Image (cartoon, rainbow, N blue to C red):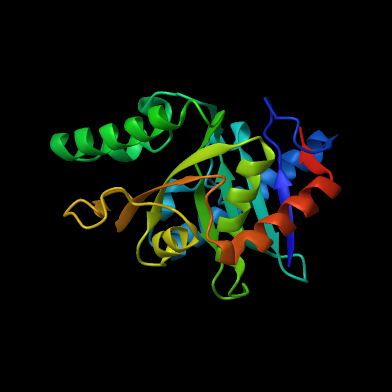
Length: 240
């Protein structure tokens, strides 16, 4: 298993050395989008019509985000994750997940919007950044069992490398992504209520809203986070 961190097209933070090779960057983003598109269609998370002619799940957000890529020994991608990064105190409507909130009925949208903004505002004085891990995709046919765990741990590692961050994420219930994030230190602030989970009409699955802070992680996973940070600090990332 190899783990890569891909810097965004513009606005990269100086956390690791970068290697400005535009061709490699474009090829990598296309590879991520085709992989994610294939997995999402197989999982019935999106219709095949959501892909472009080359099979890419294309979005401009990919060019403004960091990406984590996991490959197996043969070099095939087994997992990806996108990490958009915002300055502390950003408004909830600025986040990508606001599109999910807009598909909710008004009362539920107001509840979730308030919960997210409250978490962001309460964290603003301590954490300089907000991250929004998403675009998760894992090829369960060829991946190692640790792939999902390493992706999640990578988000904590990234948050620590940039000097501290809080994360806001929607995580699926059916593949236990929400359970994994909570086990690692994430919080569902609505746990125990009827709004702990919600059904998203576009992705056709149940989701949970998970928060976490970069300095609060289950000790069981601390060594994995440190190992990821060390690897990223020793290697160059692919950047535009």
